Image 1: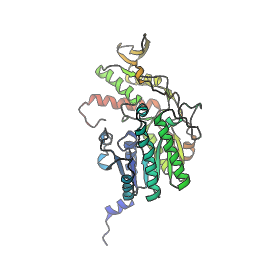
Image 2: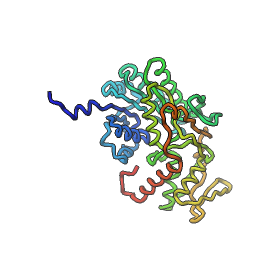
Image 3: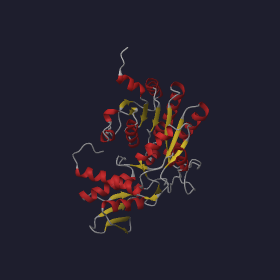
Image 4: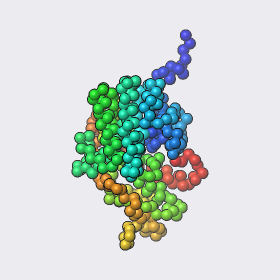
Length: 357
């Protein structure tokens, strides 16, 4: 018998499957898993908007085995899992826009809840050794009365998006407790990166301010500046995902930084990093902001960006992750903003470089 070293190495490697491979989290998680020597499969809709731009920016697109399909189709998904039998399955696919969920409740339910049922049924019936990770969200807590939120905090969802995520979270618990599936959930607070989607306020603020600085672009329009969020760096959080799914006992974990700051303060920190000195003014219609030195108008409030149901305050308590997973974030908010600003400046300076997302 001839010993095939390449085949032997492939057989030794473990397999990870990621839904939502095109997203911010999916891309960074794929990069992390490749460094851990996993064979990585990724599920993508053929209609996905971003066409693997994030994977290409991270220079890993050619290392991922892409499968095209729809996570809401049970027969398709079960056939895929039966074929590849992944060791780890991360469900990061979601309809994740809160405002969109109010007008598209059924689609939000299909993608965020029904699809999770499909995955868990598939694992239960055809791939019992697969470990499962569900991307839950701090939005499930809603306007909590607690000063911080942890694994014992009551859920109080205030949007169709958050309701769909609570339902999926409960499904994970049921399949874990009733059917013995190794099913885990990471309740992740806001996590950002240079590859964040343009619809998210952190990316919107930083990319807009950089364009104003270098290209005299129009002021960034924002909504409620008094909402507080616990913002972290996605590279730290994908490490937490890996630790959660590989925990010997399947459990749910809250992942965050333990710090919270307002959108107003985030805006001020971004201004400082870019070199603006913001001065805030009011007129009869809206609040606006200009740079003290250049007199450029850099921000104005637009009521259309206020949420139908506003979530006011989120702050994670991560004692469980600290104690059991031995995990804590490595990147603080100022460092995160610095990373995001540097990326946007490089993007502005290299307008013809298609590797930028």
